Length: 278
Image: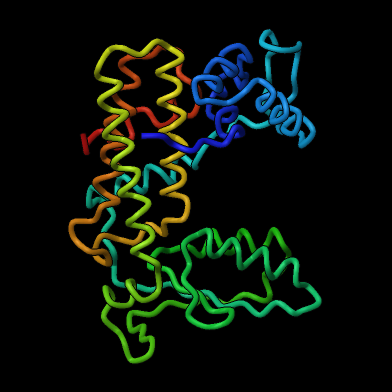
């Protein structure tokens, strides 16, 4: 089962705990994923130009150094995801709403704030009004402050949210968020994780093969999880495919840790997360 992996993702996934990437290992893993050396070189050139990496040396003997040690999805975000899957984060029935009215003269700031609210899992109720079942005020306030539009934002909470006469929380969640699309991405993730777990347990993979599997998992996991609002289980169909898919990925991470030493920083950070779901 093939996984589409952007070249940039390969580079970022192979950042070691000391912030470096071994170019020889990078090219080897990229080649195993079907990428050409030229494709890798062009990607590195862009990353260096963007200031995300510096490069010492040339070709496969080069060492890349990341400008930031942060890799992949936020680790606390992932930990919360697995705690919620395990039933350790119960929903209190409170809807958290944010409204903003940023003037047209500040369209750039308005668009950036809206994009951040959607990225945090907010669902649009009306123009400039978004809802979440999570206490996201600090996140939204931080984004509003970064764009200097604090005075344009209003927060409120409700235990009696109604949209078009609908007030049942489960029905509201199905109406406000694209649950079918979210579920489809997790079904694919579950299938990829099941296939990669068989490979990891086969004992037939060398280090490059193990890292290829790790990168493929990281790419598919990110593709499934980034657009997921991580709704509480109380608002989702049961059983929820996202819980099953993420448990399968946790098993892969554990199997990977058992097989490979000196893992990239991304997988060191994720090691042990979700192990209760194995």
